[in-house]
Length: 149
Image (cartoon, rainbow, N blue to C red; front, side, top):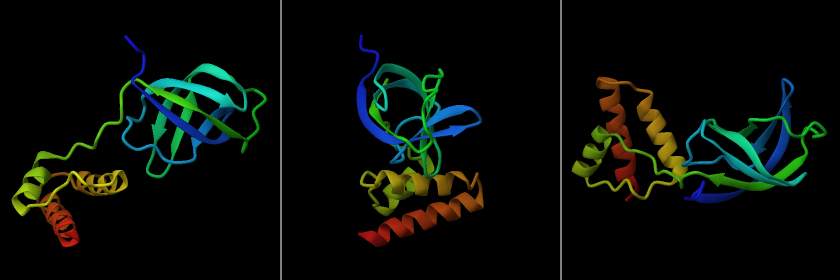
């Protein structure tokens, strides 16, 4: 059985924070679980076939944090490139039941959302908790999406 199901080419720049090297990815990863431990096959600045890393994805950046110290000679700002060996493929965003029901009732198709749009809208909704604020935000999301068609 394979240890990974997806390979993703990545590159970025090295940064050092509190004595730890971090691999800052040029483009934020979307659709992959944050805090997921995986393997980076590092090609540059040195070749490392299996570097265990943790994926940390925030609002605007993804950072790969090595689980072992490997680059004592690394320079902050130095470029790097490699391949992430992901143990599962990209996961589509999960649309909450209440939003899915409202979208279906309004005839709004949510399958065409871009990853960035889904992240923004679902975060906006998720921060509302439950109750009237959530209901209002669902209405705003549906109105915005319906207005595009």
